[in-house]
Image (cartoon, rainbow, N blue to C red; front, top):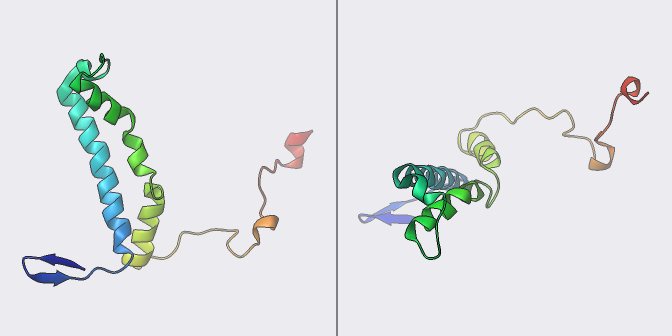
Length: 111
């Protein structure tokens, strides 16, 4: 529940996936823009140089898309649970994990 200007806003539990997805995309975009503004000085720095923080954020920007689940997983949650879209097709959905084919090479390629 969020109180904004005295109005109570209620979000479904899965709305966190949407907020996390937008926050991750925002962090990546801000790091990209900061590097564009700072220029080449942010790609190599010395000691406590403030532009070094921009370079470090740029190098670590993809981490924000992985923390708490990748953005692809968050998009699936948003589409299935918030928008009511059908689940993605999975041929092995009802098969126990021990029976799922993995790293299997067709017989004709093994010879």
